[in-house]
Image 1: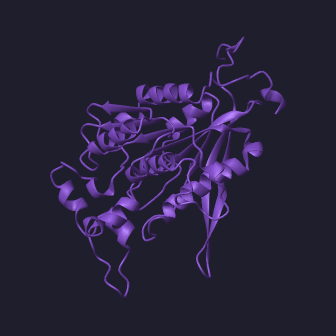
Image 2: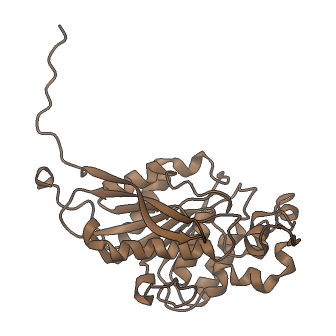
Image 3: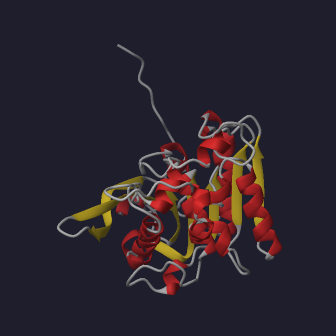
Length: 308
């Protein structure tokens, strides 16, 4: 018989976390069809109002797997934040459908703040790659009527902080300075070209992102930068051969020029979505930065978990 093992005085250091799976946050009318857009929501079992982080997954505008980045999302929930991860429409849907979806996901958190115990004055957005693009878009259009969905109030567009991991800010220059990638991104089959110009069906819509620069700028977060935006954390790897790290340079410079708070962090040796991004050092840095911006002092009281 194995020796009995006893645990006494277990330290209560993290809250119990509940997952609300595949919540429909929006329905898109597609004529004879209706598409449900889903999100997963991690809710810590604490009684007080909590900050929230809305996460958008990357996928090159071709997919939006909102179950990604579970390690970082779990760590954010462990410090007491509600963490919602939302899908959005991708190619063949065109801009601005994905931005409207992202804003409707934000609206859902505002509309259901009491259900999930969210403090709506402390909602941050986070994303990687195309999701970073969306988080930058929501930050740049915070408290703005730009690209406002039907039935959404301007007050509901407000975000408190923005985190973008190897995201992009300027669709005209995604591959800037990267051999091979620069030519690909300038072609007619690049994801950004298809997002902006559409998929050919009956009519030939093939064009590069550079063929319609005005439309490309309209679809770029960089174009919406103004004074009074929330603080941004822009992180990029210096070994990224898919999205130029200059994308973070451009956005950081534009934000700084308008007097906004921005941190530009370079992860040496990291590529696009490589293993470096999943390490505790990166997660801890993001969490520490968010806690400061959201004025959050940890996970909150754990004393009454058994009563919930």
